Length: 355
Image (cartoon, rainbow, N blue to C red; front, side, top):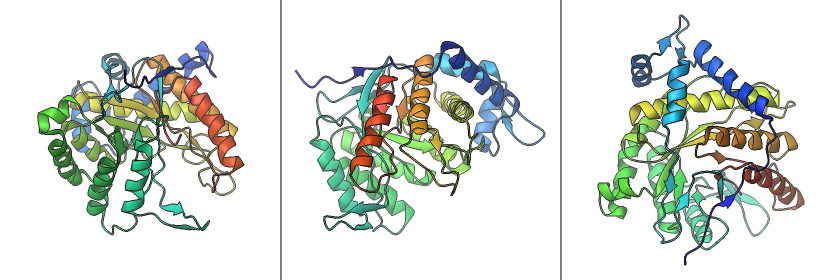
């Protein structure tokens, strides 16, 4: 027998049933009454044909029925396919899997100092992950700083990841025009386009919003191109509590859920059969500097709450719970990761990145 994945989570519930319902209803209200600004033209056309409208302020409003239909019709049978037999990841129910992640621009060398990360470092990280039984998935963990242009960065990132591991790979793409080239690479590896579409082994991660409640227009274009090319997609909202989302844990969670559901509605209208991963990733800001502050108790509770909302919707769900403020693999690093990763897993996140 091959390895068995998908430890069962979902037992930890930081939100009461009434609080879950309140987060849901408030997110729906935000989408109906406030909406999101800067939608791309294709999104406006699709949403407005399904009951949406543009407000006087130019914000795209999503009707409750559209969002509820998107949740109801979303696929619950998403599988992150691997090119290695026995390593397919079933994201249904409360099965939990662990992943790398981070997109770090620098790497700690053996001499204890940091340097810019390279394509070779990224491939090496994928090769290490390929041999770690407890890491089930490779999410692009380093940025290839030795590639000077965006197209080259995207293409070389895809190549480094796919040549380094046979496990499922996730990465971002910086421009919609780069999607076809990366798709052709995947089609060639799979044998042809039909084979890749039947068992896609790469997911495209897209931060389709710039919080608070604003679409990232170019990212949405990349999202649409990825869906049409047959890629599974991860729909990411990453507001920072106290900076780009409300300072309260509840308010930050509501905004992240609303922004992610808006992305889900969009991709469902593009392709009703899309394999989409619900990935609200509410972060915390250091109120002294405005910088992202990972690894604290608030972060752990936020990530667990986001995972609980994924289980409430019964959607394939990803969490960035492994993020830490530690700059070295030290005691702080171990404590922060163990706290947040454990809570997200126990709350039922199907894919816990930066683990």
